[in-house]
Length: 490
Image (cartoon, rainbow, N blue to C red; front, side, top):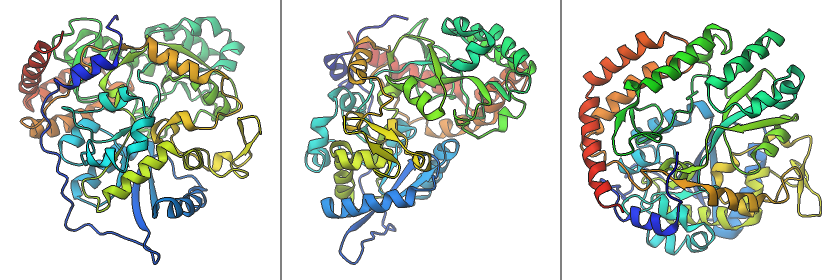
């Protein structure tokens, strides 16, 4: 899989050619309310992905003491569990419920539906001025849709790399350590998992998989994982295909079915919404997204050694540039204050570390050498670090590699631009079909991708329902847009 190296010039060229966005409204919902306390501080409602930890209220009290003084706001942080976030935010968005900031799941679709406020000019240049200077311009350019920005990307790795995280101590005990270091594909895991199953018959999940599991397959998913529209990364990069009609997809599903039947995936996987914390040693291997320092972080959090084997080289796709963003809701009554908070979150070391790690002296301790350590109360608070904001102003853990920043720079340099980087589908004429197609996919996705059902029977049924819901027409529509975009590319 070889593509051109990513560059700011390339992104600028592709962004200039992206498809037209369909009217993201900046008007405020007339029914929304604006709260402020007795001192006139504005309250911002912030929806964030993650578990509701015991000490969230304690940390947010500290956060609000600081943000009151700095920018005259308090923040009502509302966390939604990992497996429920996308669906619940769709309900909130569809209902018109007013809020101010959210972790932007399904960024392109929600931006095109008008859920997020455009922040390209006044907000970013005024209330977000310092933020704009702090974030790698590749992110701001790459997250733009038709040259317009609808969310703030987290300043981190620009590309993505998926791979196998595994219990390194268990691998050594069973004698599969070297095999795991060379296991690139899903199929490579089979003899390893069989040995794990034989050695640990009571282990719940030789391979961790739940209802949200989606295996790595070499496609660029144009409208998100699970929907049928993709471009093959290892094949014809000019053709939009239905991934469920491809032999490679069926082979992947057959492998998962075989794993399920052998007990390598647990029987309730298709209905299991548990994110399965790494610290619970009831699993051997799982799919994870890599970033520099990830292995050290996983090992520190789990309290035992985690290993990692990459499935592919780093690649920069739209979803790697737009996978971790904070958006301002189009229903917000206080977009300027919301942007001031995002600006603070990405430029102020105190607030960034407080939200990331909790309270100094309670959830972590400063070692006096530039690093910090966890305490016995660290597990009582967490916030998705990769999703929250600028990682380059975080205090490093004592378990982080000393050259972590250099590793990020090298990783970003190695990452190559995918074939559709900068191409965004205009959904204006296909939104009704997409809603129906999404519902169809949701019916089949979890059972198929956990091996819970016979793939040959269910893929055939899935494709019949997709065709009946207009999948072929949608593919033709996207292909026309993609052809027009390709014609503008050098």
